[in-house]
Image (cartoon, rainbow, N blue to C red; front, top):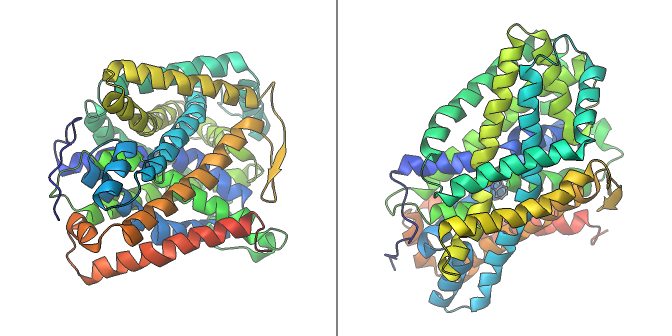
Length: 464
Ligand code: TRP
């Protein structure tokens, strides 16, 4: 049965705007900050390989499912799940899946904004030439000084959250198109410049090898599931913005004649491409200048500035790089706030303006815990066999990326492939009952849910 619903929040002005907006959501700190540091912490090439596997076998199919649900429901994730569940004769409690996403969105946004704040601080540091001629010790000292100062972190966190609220309060569609059309290609080109610099460093090939050749020696004293598979799975979900309703809400603004399959592949390709480029730019610098690949969340902030301090026009490129990274983070953060805001508008009859400020304020408040995680409240803890250094920040990060997003993803997969009628999904994907549809259905029914479950339970040691 074809659905003819429309969203009260409007529609994208063309199919390209959806691709731009969803790519804007996907490409962000996840690709340039999170991907390299997780790769460095979790064993390099093997991590990258598993990550790519997760993107193809779970990420893309679940992204398709999530867009499909959004476009069919045409509401915020909570109401979409509620409406579709009733339509398919299922329990209205499926709306809890929407809630899981809204809550995950708040938690991710709360720390995302703090890290985005680091990039803003770095716009000024690079722009003022702080890194000219500096070595690894000096960049490390500059970074440590920044994160040990909660007042400065708070300032930029507040600033960035305000930027996010501002766009969401005006409706994510205005402005986003221009921002993504010019800034994304610019970021891409600048990453290529950085790759160019990386090629000129002594240990370029070591960097490449580290990224693309799994080193089984490194894996010997690691637990494959908890150290490699689970973080890689979490990173695939995080980077593609799936599992929490962000892509679902963007899908709810998508016109009926746009191909979900094509769109999902384009978005995933762009997203993965940026992450890999970031890796190629960073690891040769890490090795050439004697940094530790496992340096943690500060990795790009201590490695890239060395390059900016050495290369010609480095001050200019460095400043521009962090500006573009801030914009990439901005087009991502708005998609984290949007599901909660649309819910408040639809169900609490608030104006978009008011809803954006209230929801943004809650996320800002929660972000204070992350601000303190790197200084006054820093502590270590272990989960699923791994030790984490940065207290609450790591707890939020692991809880969302490694638990809530995969859980959301599995439930989305189960809902679309086991519970929704076949005809509804065929209709929505527009693939008719073709080979492509059958492949998707097989993956989303069996491979994706089983993959997530097996990885998750092995990682927390349930099967060992
Ligand atoms: N994907 C974004 C990044 O890589 C972050 C992000 C935006 C996100 N929206 C999301 C992550 C929804 C998970 C779910 O930076």
